[in-house]
Image (cartoon, rainbow, N blue to C red; front, side, top):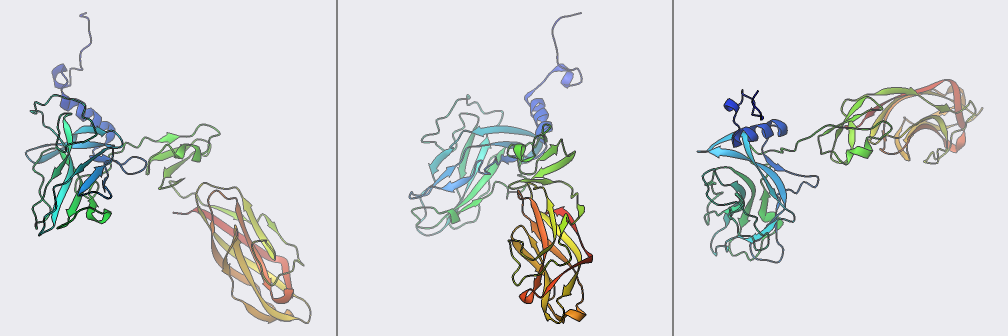
Length: 369
């Protein structure tokens, strides 16, 4: 047997080329091309430099630039570029005295016939269009008084559109339109690899390492979460129904002003905290007894954490003719706080109290979308 290792025979007769490697990387990252936003969302973001002439800054970042030939984009093949932080700054052309102008900020890659040797380019005093490293942040200058210019290059991404107003001596944030994801065909190519928790580890402990939209498998719960803008939430609503965990006894009096101190509480729910907001949907029937010979207003208030979310219809009745309270209430159960929900009896001057017989409440808890 001959020595050595060769490429698989099914791939270009045992030979690799640059296109094959790009194709392999495309299979890993998916078929989206564009700027990888990063956790802060500022990859390759263009901003105005305050107190200057028409000067812009392009933040550091990473991106996949599609291979384009003769105006035809090949989304399977793409170039990977990396601009170290903090990025680059440069001046745009001087504003016209008579008309506004639109310039495009782009990231473009030299084609395979470019003879420029690869070299590191100093970020200080960056000159737009310097293709020494094989790619460049560049400016496509518009025509005074005209619209957005067309891009005369192959293999590029549009980063921003800048309006240089006539006679302007500086730029503001309102003059720059972020085009990183507003341009047709450009998306977020961030590879989102699912993460999983170790036994005994919370979802919150790993959520900070996941990109927005990424999945997290909670090993202890046998459940999948999705990373949102700030926290991770269950991918599929797994509602649960619970009955009250504690309740008052017959003779528990209502109060004039039920509040966060749980005064007037007649039925209560307790439970563990969750790392995401939840909604409690309650159905209840609560009977009330009045002191003999007395009459007055009464109602049922429903609280969660410290807030009053619902009050049933207030009724003015005599003790001999009190009717039960029956209704539905929705409450917010805040994230990272224990479940603490309760019904309280409002009774004017404390004239009525709970009748435990046939008084009950049920609650369905679902993650808040």
